[in-house]
Length: 212
Image (cartoon, rainbow, N blue to C red; front, side):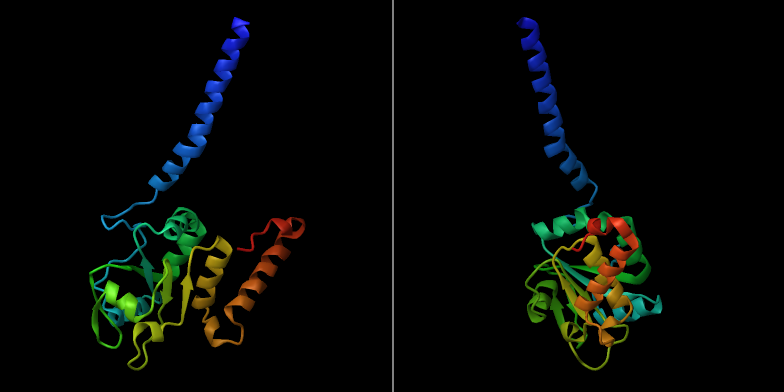
């Protein structure tokens, strides 16, 4: 009996350690891989530093044959956490962003100065209010060239709100990069077509292709 009890206790201890490692240690390790700044926002190495003069940022991105993105986040945003800890850890996603976009992070409640495309000087917070950004994360895709005196939100070629899976995320970036907004194929149809193409390529494993 004593031997059986000892084995039972040993197994219980092992299972407890494994469960603790799986539930607590592994998520902490995943989170630790995402740098966080003093403002509480994630800081991947592909973010660009900027004076947040959007007209200049658009022009500089265009000179590099890239598109400028304004990325709104806020401290404590669970959807921002999910985005950074999942889809933005995917090498294919990160490579596509680096190759095609220049991303500048904005704090939804931040005080850093922002110069809008219509010339108005704001803060990150007042810019979010002016542009009616009330959800994070929000990706604002700016045009290759600014036309007229529109403010940034009106000039943007599109927005993406929330934390999506790799398929939706990459499809949105691709749709913007290919100027799908100028075609008759809206994003939802483009996304559906791309899912179909991925499923066709997967053959017998089509059911395993994510649709998010």
